Amino acid sequence: MKRIWPVLAYCFLLLLFSPAPGRAEEARDITGRCVITAAPGSQGKKADMLDQSYLTYYTGKYLEISSPEGEPCGGLFLRFAKKETAYRVDAWQNGQWTAVAQDSRLYANSYLPLPSPASRLRVVPTGQDTLSIAEITVLGEGVRPAWVQDWQPWEGKADLLVLSAHADDELLFFGGVIPYYAAQRQKHVIVCYLTEQTSCRRNELLDGLWLCGIREYPHMGVFKDIKNNSLGDSYGFWGEKPVVEYVTGLLRQYRPDVVVTHDKGGEYGHGAHRVCADAMVKALSLAQDSAYLPQAGEPWQIQKLYLHLYRENALTLDWRQPLSAFDGQTAFDVAKAAFDCHKSQKSNGLIVQDWGPYANNVFGLYYSAVGPDEQGNDLFEHIGAEQ
Image (cartoon, rainbow, N blue to C red; front, side):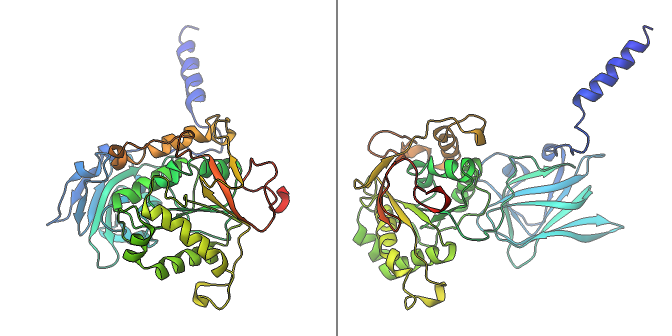
């Protein structure tokens, strides 16, 4: 009888720690135990891709990966530096390299599952670009862990469009809006940016948006960033016409019911913030005009436009309520955690706050096609089934 007890205990532990029937086990991070070989003439080293910094990176013609014995690779998660790159993954099979998967989406990061696990891989750019990788994660067999980002292309129309001047503004000034409406309320939310971002900041903004529950790839900005406190100077640098056309194009492309963007005064006066508000106000009517910019798509009329800190028809939203979509965390908690992903911006002294002069829960209804807000506690009041 004494010999049976250890066997029974072992069987109990197997049952306790084995995945439930029908549910695949989560893939493990095996990067640290892989042999990663750089191409001849490359710059950087393996440590640059494992240091949790988007400022250091490897650059080369290809990258070779050998997984630990008995633990074949089931997928790769790459965070690109310098430039988004289309690439393929080759596996060593029957004495030769055979292409097994590829990604041509040109996203700032890429999760690529392999159709069948392999122990020796090569990552190769499919075009003329050199491969530049800031961070790499090699996953074993199993289900993609939730923290590994798997961005999807945008489909359909938006319920809500958030226009942010820079990466991190979407959290500082609209922080609670994104997690509350995207994850808790299950609204179709597209986050758009005005200015271009470095590869570091693109990766940071993706980390933050993923935490907020966004799963479709955001719309990256196209205007070179400048810092000034003048609306006129910003327009003078970019040109008012190109900016207004860009914003009008966003409305027609995503066809949102509700739009949220910056304070007309630029929060603390930033010219790019002011441009977002001014260009969006101009685009309101232009987006409806079939004679204006026909190449940008069919005319579109939004239902409501909210400006941050706008004093007329103002409402103050509550970001301190527990959200089931985030296991009891509040929208404020999520926005703070997401802002922490913007490591490169920590020296600017700004913090996420729902109080003070830049409170991210205070908005004003600048325009409405569905009448004024009555309850004043929901950006979607009077829209669709929620009337």
